[in-house]
Length: 177
Length: 317
Image (cartoon, rainbow over all chains, first blue to last red; front, top):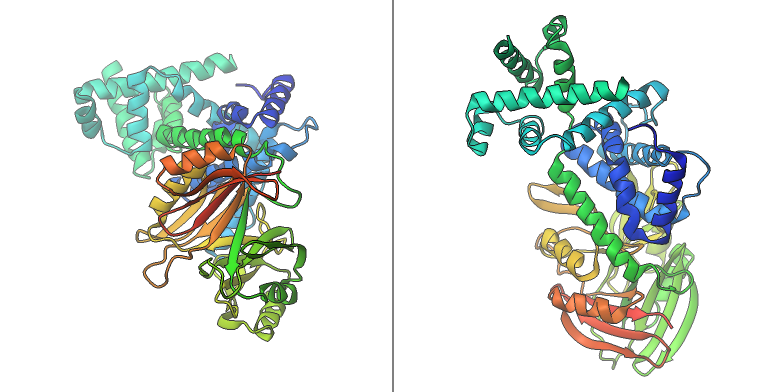
């Protein structure tokens, strides 16, 4: 997905400001980007989930005060995430010498965007392939465990794993091509 | 060859997932792009987490239609702590320690109703007099001030008892604990960050100590559409958590058997108090009084939760 079209973005923000129930549209649009940014900075998956939750909770709270000035919403979300990460660092160790989390520069934004696209493409894989990817990479389960859970042979699971990654590669190439 | 790629890919994924060196795969033209993707998938979000967060946000936004369109009185948020005391004097303490300003005093059939502004936060105080029917139970508050040491000294000077002197805490605050002459506890803090108040918080956040924080949060979610903002637990005991109802925050930590849960009260401003009252009751709250028009122009109902906390659910006049 290219950086959100300004018109769409603005319309979605205004819709959510008028009716908070529409906030989920913004969530669906930006979840993977925010998570891709946060997981680069967070210590582990649990922390990344805490921070990502906090980002969207805060965004929902403060959206009524967001003013459209042509800056993509994601830049605002990254700023909230950087603050949340800094707060978390300080909670863990207020003497930490770690520099505060920064919002990403252009080259990091490109890396985050690519990562976000990969995550989004996983969502669009056929069911079984998606399940194998989630069990293998999110849950960290072995091929044998996945085979048992899906009642498939280990060879079939490996085949699904290969197909899923090939599909992701082709979809990515299609976007860039 | 296809079979061989299946095995080579799986071995590479094993290396990646166990944090070992998988760079050899980059020299294999067929395998390399898949290995790069596999490395990226290590940080793939959990689909269950994404769905759970969406459901949380949806619950909050559905409720916020009920809550946020209300014309809340100026200066108030969805949640206002309501402290019940028998005697007057709490306002003096708040004025001395926090520079509070009393914004309204109303004689009521049961005593005196006061409203006080502390920084950017509002508190309600009900004084029932020594013969009054309202049971007093201490409340706990987390208050951010620019200079915790000075505020702590003023609190002691105003009759407060030191529970713990101000000190830098590992969670990024300089914090001292005081109990006032009425038994209320004040966690007086200065945030050790760019601003004395952390982002997204107000001067005063009420703090409660329920027995079993997770089940209490679950109740608040079902009853009032609360949204959990964070939860820090140590070996299964929640030391600190924060929820939000509408735009009002409440903090909590498990009582751990060391103290009785505060049987305090909260005053909620919502657009549809009848709907929220019904929802709270169906979530297990005990009905105290169904919503009815009050002489001061608001429509108010009241329920009590399992911790003994009273919730006034009001539609502003």
